[in-house]
Amino acid sequence: MSRLVIVFSTDPVRGRIIQKVLMRSRVEALVLETIEQVREAISRQAPGVAIFDTAGCFKGEINHLGNLCGTLAQTAVILVGDGAVLERFEASATEKELRLSNPLDPELIAEKVGTLLSLKVEQKPSEDGSLEKDLKGFLGLR
Amino acid sequence: MTNANNIIAVIGPKGGVGKTTISANLAIALSKLGKKVVAVDLDLGASNLHAIFGIKQLKNSLDDFVQNKVANLSDVVLDTEIENVAMVCGGDVPGITNMPYQKKLKLIRHLSMLDCDVVLLDLAPGASYNVSDFSLIAQNPLLVTTPEIPSLMNVYSFIKAAVSRRLLFFFKRNKAPELVALLEQAKDFEKHPRLKTMEGFFSAAREINPGVADSAHKIIRGLKPFLIVNRVPSKNDTKAGQIIQKMLREFLSIESAEVKTIREDRAVGHALARMKPVLIESPNSFFAADIEEIAREFQG
Image 1 (cartoon, chains in turn brown, green):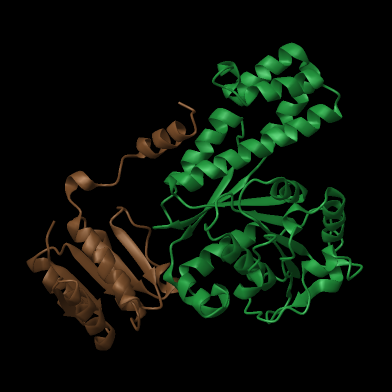
Image 2: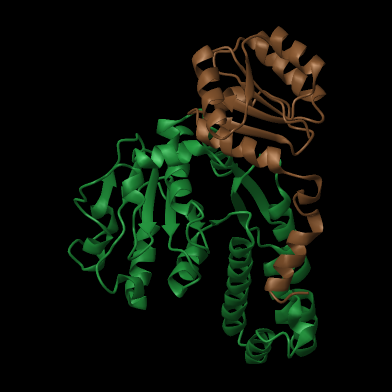
């Protein structure tokens, strides 16, 4: 997984808050304020984690972000913002998408980014069968 | 006005799964749909529903009713700051958790007489007789769990115990002591492996008393438990719910359990810290959206 982390926020204050808290967790992040900058950054290198802050976005920007999410197959996407706005995004095709509704919680974002970056292929969540198997085991129903 | 179809019991077999938060916010969501709601804190001995509504001074509580200081339960109904949401604060007087059966019957009778569209019961954790009895009077029992194994285990066990209790009452009412004995045997399914599943149980029951066994089977098949999996990472994460549904089908012959999810949301902790319901503090949060979706299922 790429170690590149990008933060898109049209609100420079919110963007920098997220960046600063990530830095405290020793994660360097690139803060981008326009959709064009995001496209350019992605075309250079697919990020490991993309944080899209939808606060203050126009409808058109939300649509662009939605389209971008669909193209980021190798990237873990964290959508941040008002719950009602986040509902407008299509359901995620992968399990790599996370939605965090307001209020902005940069510590939580940093925690999630840290987890995502430390995930290795062999540490993927257990396959479907195992929860059922464990549950039946504990209940003596095997 | 209250009728026989409007009691919702919020049950959390494991403590700390968010039952009280869901109860308070579900009451508000139902009021937004035009319902007059009375939320009743039946987490006897450990009540705190009033705190979520921001009520600090209790003028009355269930204690007054239980101690016969007032004649009617309606005398201890308090208004909240939210329009069309009133509540009965829980009792904390020593011994209330083990209230005498007659007193419990009186309380149940008064609950069904409250003047409102929906009575919403916030029950204690666990599977005590109090919880079972109050959940049995509800037309709509909602079981709250989180996606972790300990909570899922408790919710499965609670449903199994409720099924068993319902069968026990049915067999006793239909004077079938031999089926009561079979039900007792089913508790030890390691010794009686045939009775491990409800299908196996009913197959054995049919050999003893086919008429009563078939009627009871029909009742169990008709059960429609409503499960809420709280704190899921994303709305599409229905894995835990699907597994419980599958196990209910496989072992308890319950075909139509319904499952809804509520997403993990920091807005909940934020609202709790401010002693405000999430639907008031963060009406656009995921939690609020998911609760409102659930409320629509019960608007009647």
